[in-house]
Length: 505
Image 1 (spheres, one colour):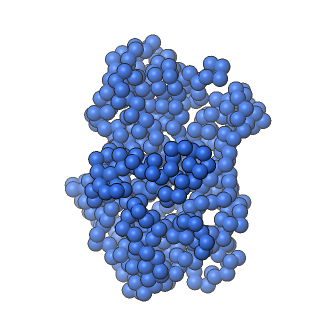
Image 2: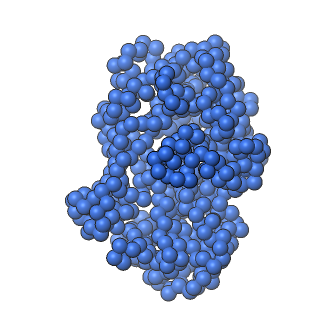
Image 3: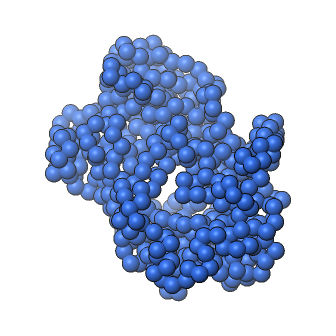
């Protein structure tokens, strides 16, 4: 029996201990019904925080349910902990939902990959570890739109409370929070300073903290890395002492089919083991005495609502889901920012090309150094400098983000293997195009329809076009002269608006 429930469940649950963490791998065939006060669906960035905070009250029974495996105690957990293995986690479905968009009509029909974490810690366990709060005016806009208490001054104390910054606390940084943040892990990489110097030569200010008083400008990015390892939401908030709480149960490898309702009240979830052979997978109910909390992200939360009968009536009927409540906004108004990489040859051998299979001994040394001391190139995602700028005069606040990489990646985010290159990634931050999430069928195992509708508006096309031109200006500065070779993509002859638009597509 699970002795750490406030009230005994109706059936036993198989538990195990890994890496000093109390958790459950999956429901057993005899576990037909379990009961908690709060049931949190999705063990990602939000779910881990909620599990920590709610279970701090020992009188409350909390369940955290995650489809994927634990982020520790697996044979290959190292690939999550080692920052430099970022591309590995984005390339397959081991810890990743491995979603893809629908064919994009403004991108020559291409289907783009949409990595989403399917592991304890969610996307914070597989992402690039860049800590970015957003601009203060974003929060002011939320409050102006009616979200009282969500202005920047309201949120700042919580940012500080959540964070321990390696540089110490100040008016913007935290000093004793669970999430560890650092910067400048690769101080001997000359291309980082070259990028900052070049951007300043192009007229952009240096900012000593893009998450502090002034976001606008260029500088060193904050990274959720601690002592050479990824500091995900799981690592930060589901520490061994939290996992040892008798009122917290963490279920991994547990697939959620739908939310259960009694009338219009959510009372639990239907789950089954997340196994490959699902023909005879037993279904179970996990009941919530107080609340069911969906924290499954921008894709899976609306998908679960629609699978449960909450969404647009006609769409639910079209896919064969019984309608519980007509709520047409579910899955609508999807907004995502699109970005592109500009690649340049590098004349000096100081790039990540040395970390490719062309140099197996170097790769082995990087791995051994990280395993032994958590230092060296293995302790970084290598996206360590960047900035926030305005794409054109008249913009109220920065609407473009830069990230510099001392290497080059393909469209699947894998390091390019043919020579020394460096690249600048430019992303539009406030897209005006809108898309949607819909069900592909009534089968919960079918990936949802993801339609971001990239570059549907002319404003978005203009902003991205400007981003490419502004990024080129930075790489053309004298600070890059000793490093910069020929432009690889886009090539220099691509200059006009139609040519740039065609290259983006």
